[in-house]
Amino acid sequence: MHRGITILGEGKMAADWQGEFGKRYTARNNPSIDKRAGFFGTLAQYEIDSVFEVGCNVGTNLEAMKRVLDCSVAGCDINNDALAEAESRGLEVYWEDAADLDHASDEYDLVFTVGLLIHLNTPELIRCMKEMNRVSNGLVMFMEYAGDDIEVPYRGQRGALIKRDYGGIYQALFPGAVLLETGFLPKEMGFDDVTYWIYYDIGDSASAYGVEEVAWESDQESERNLLAASLTGEVGAVRVDRQHSRGYWPRIGERTSTG
Image 1 (cartoon, rainbow, N blue to C red):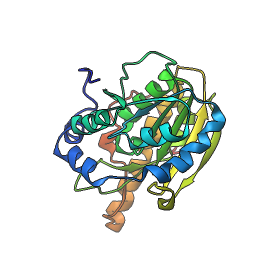
Image 2: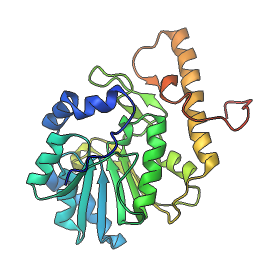
Image 3: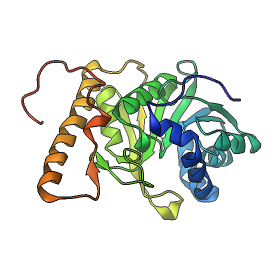
Image 4: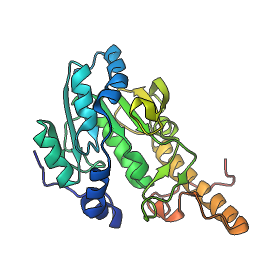
């Protein structure tokens, strides 16, 4: 079911993911359903009746969940080729903006991502987490590359892959959320060395201070890294570029330390 709603993101990267860049990603990624089902089967302890994946691509994770969990599955993406493949597999999928989900509040027991948040800049990331929390009836799960605001060169694109402490960011946005589980999933389990976090939270409203703090911390990390790079000539992995966050979120007063 394709819904013609707001396009994800702001600028070039959103168009890239919808176009040839996204098609090539879909073509080269074919994770093992059997291996991933092993981890997803452990989620049965949470008695989940419905799940929704933000950034589902062709639906591999949804298929794995269908095999091992007694629940309904659905997802969304912005690449039409990936959605067409997911639909051919009999999956319920939507063309939707990760930062503006077209679903009712508390519609799904579990809302999750696998390798999506790493591709979002700071404003998109904050909006996506807020939407995931709104649509979830309690559980949210992130399965992402973890790091300290490290931008990694990715297929010739800048700003296309950022390693962050996604659990910490979510906790800052939703201080009342309870961390139920976290861990590491290696390639042997069908995942690409990702960290996962599972949270429980029943509040839909993000902390205004948390939103400000996340954006501010991103700026501070960028400034420190840019200074270090200028002194060392480092050109490998770099901190999140200032352009990804500065200018989108207003300050709540002046800061005098880097925290």
